Each structure stands twice: as structure tokens, then as C-alpha cells.
Amino acid sequence: MKKYLLNLAAGAVFLSVAFAGFAADDTVKVGVLHSLSGTMAISETSLKDVLLFTFDEINAKGGVLGKKIEPVIVDPASNWPLFAEKAEQLLVKDKVAVVFGCWTSVSRKSVLPVFEKYNGLLFYPVQYEGEELSRNIFYTAEAVNQQAIPAVDYMLAEGKKKFYLIGSDYVYPRTTNKILKKYLKLKGIPDESIVEIYTPFGHTDYQTIVAEIKKFSADGSACVISTLNGDTNVPFFKEFANAGLTSENCPVVSFSLSEDEFRSLPTKDLVGHLGCWTYFMSLKTPENKAFVSDFMAWLKTGPPGVQTKNRVTCSPMNLSRIGVYLWKQAVEKAGSFDVDKVREAMIGQTFKAPEGEVTMQDNHHLINEVFIGETQANGQFKIVKSLGPVAAEPFSDKFLK
Image 1 (cartoon, rainbow, N blue to C red):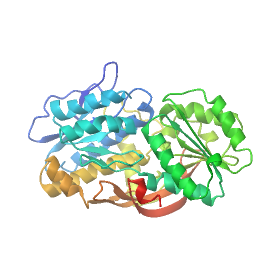
Image 2 (spheres, rainbow, N blue to C red):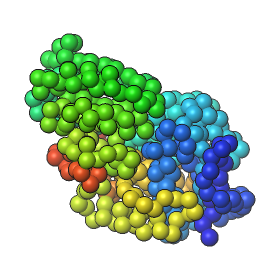
Image 3 (cartoon, helix red, strand yellow):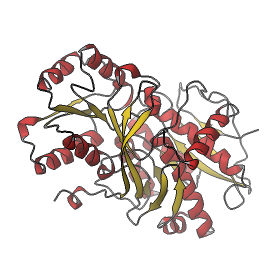
Image 4 (cartoon, rainbow, N blue to C red):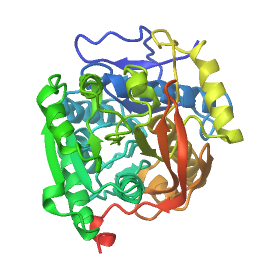
């Protein structure tokens, strides 16, 4: 029987299995810090699932340093201060060797002081705004120069001259758009051709905003750059389609929408809109074929409560899995679970991922492949451009020149 240790927030209903033997010499505890309820559950639940899949995948091959991985799962419930509380619980009470988690940058910013205070180790798997580097975090996901900048370059090459920047009201969208506005000005786009607007998490009324977008894009030269996060994407795209806006008259490039979120969206209305990621489920590689098929097979036998219908893989899921394998390799190189030794061993680690080989840099970010994808009616992406391996640069002053 698979063993999972759960520490759920009040009111959260999830798995029903508890295990009290994590102190055993043949196990190593790791933390899973993802929202399983609230507005971000639409995205984060699948990251919890792929982590459990990866732990089982590794355990089936002997574990890490001969120890089986025992996950300690907590639910911060899309509550940013609660992320810090749960992170401290994992590090101090549960004494996990490593934590995999967070989605939004505000949740990562919330836990950062905790990991630095207790010298914990966090693997963060979701695209973000950069301008940060912590010795206690490894950022496996897309930095701005691996997602936002390539996406804008693609739209400029397509002849777009006006950019409507819409995002959820928190640090990732605001910082990313601040960088993009500077970049667009360097490319000759004037202030009057750039609009910037934000809505709260869970916002549902996009009628006025979409009407503005329709007017802004009337001449056919505009596009939307979206950093909307979570379930607010559902009413946005429904209103977008209702207004007669399409990928032909005003394409949307989304940085927080992947195959996984498409399961809850009207994909027929998203056809032709774009995404920029380091992974797509549609990639034709042997490694991706194995990843997808093995994950789908695991869903049939995984822990109770895991949804099995219409499941897909996506970039944050892939990057979560990559983080676990890089950590495993670093532990084995160090011959220890000690955070300081593992951190040192992480630098230079490589992994043959579904998208290609990735490499961990000195700056705690990955060299990874970058792709532009076009949304299909079936919720998958057709890759329209491959940019090859791109080294992540978290600080914008290095590429805003």
C-alpha cells in the first residue's frame, strides 16, 4: 500500500490515508506545498498529482540513497500567508529533506523568508517574473527571457504593433509587465500602443475590459499578453469569445494557461491563441511518450481521490517532475540529504527531460528548450516555433539593453 502523510488545512477534503512511520531509517520525508482548494486549485492540484507519480516512479526503482520517498502533503488553500505557516510546519515539525511547491509568486515570496531562516530547500516549478535569486530555492521553470520575451518577439514578428497587457493583481504579472513595457519601448512600441490592466484573483466580470480590448484591437494590429492566473481565465475567455474576438482579429498569448487549465476552459473558443512554454504534451520525443503514458497508467492505480478523467500533462507538471529528479541526482552525488551538500551538488546537474536535456546553472535556474504553441480544439498545442535551448536569466537588466 502506498504511504502518504497528510497535513490538510481545515475544511480541505483529500486523501484519507495517514502514515505514522516516517521516522523509519528506510524512508525520507519530502514536502508537497500546493493549493488543493481555493482559486489556485485549478492549477496546483495537478502538480501535487505529478509529484506523487514521480515519487512512486523513483520508489519503484529503489528510492533515493536506498530510502523510499514519503511525501508530506499540506494544503495552503490559495491563502498566501498560510503558505508561510505550512512551510514552517514542513521544515520544523515534519523535518522534511526538501519541499516541492508553490505556484504564484506571492506564495513563493511568502515562504522565502521561512526557507532562508531554517535553511530549507524549495523547488519552484512555475513560470515567474525573475528579479530574485535565493540560495534556498531552485527555480526549474521559465524565467521572463524564456517565456514572456520570446512570446513578445513572436508577436512583433507577426506584425503586431499594439499590446494589451492584462494580468492578475499580484507580483508576477506586475513585474513581468514592467519588464515587457521596457522591452517593447526598446523595440519601438510607443506608450499609447501599450495598455496595462489588472484584476483580482477570482474576478468574474470581464465585460467592460473585453469591450475595451475590442475597441483597442479594431484596426487588426493588436494582441493581448495575458498573465491572468487561476480560474479567472474561464470568464475572461468566455466573454472574449462572446464579443466576437478571435485569434484572427486579436490573438491572446497566455503565460499561465497550459493543457491542464484547458480542461476547465471552452477550448473551442481558444483555437489559434498562443502559449509559450518549455514543454508541450504534443512533443514527439521518446522521453515524452514514456512520461505521458506512464503518468496515465499511474492515474489508474494512484492514491484515493486523484481524478482520472480527461487528464493531461503540461509544462509546470513536467518541471515539477524534473525538479524531483534533479534533487535525487544531487542527493546521490552528495551522498547525503544535507541541504548544504545537496545545494552544492545541484549545480551542473543535467537531466534528459521530455523536451530535451536540461542543465542546472549557477544561478539556480535551468537551461531549457523554449517553444511557441498554438491552441487546438482538442486542448493541445501545435508547436509553431522551436527556439532551442535558452539559458534562464532571472535579472532583466542583463537583457534589457
